[in-house]
Length: 158
Image 1: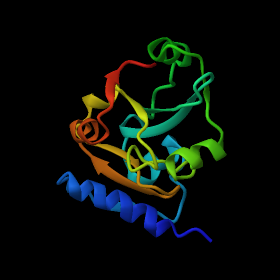
Image 2: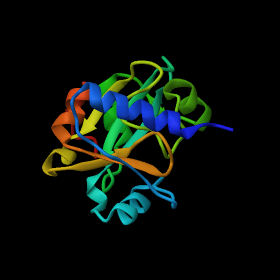
Image 3: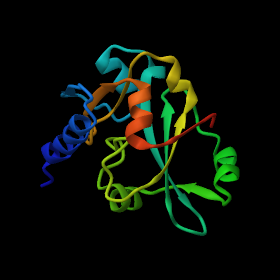
C-alpha cells in the first residue's frame, strides 16, 4: 500500500526550502478535479492550478502544463510552442515521470526535471491552489512563488 504521507511531506519540504509559508490541507473527499478541489476548498475553479502531463509523440519527453481550472489546454498551440506533436500522457507514464498519481500531481517535486508551462491566467489571482501529491490534498500559494519554484514559462495555452 502506498504511503501518501511521504508525497505530501516532499511537497512541504520544497515549499519550506523556498520559504513559502503554505499549509497542506487534506480532505476526506477527492480533490482530483478542479471542480472537486474548488468545492472542498471554497474557492473559485479559476484559482485551481491543475497539473497536466503531456508527452512528446517523437521525443517521449514529459511536458507539464499548470493551467487554471477554468481553462482547457489548447494542445495544438502547445505542440507549436514545443515543436513536436503531443498527446496526453497515460497514468503509467505520469507515475513513472513524476512519481505521483493522476489527480494528485503537484506542480513540482517530480522524479525528474520536466519542461513546464504555466497558464498566465493564474497570475490574476492573489492566491491559487495546487495538488500536494495526493488526490485529496492541496496547498495555497501565490502565483509568483509557483513560477519561481517551478521555473516554468508563463504563456497563454487556452
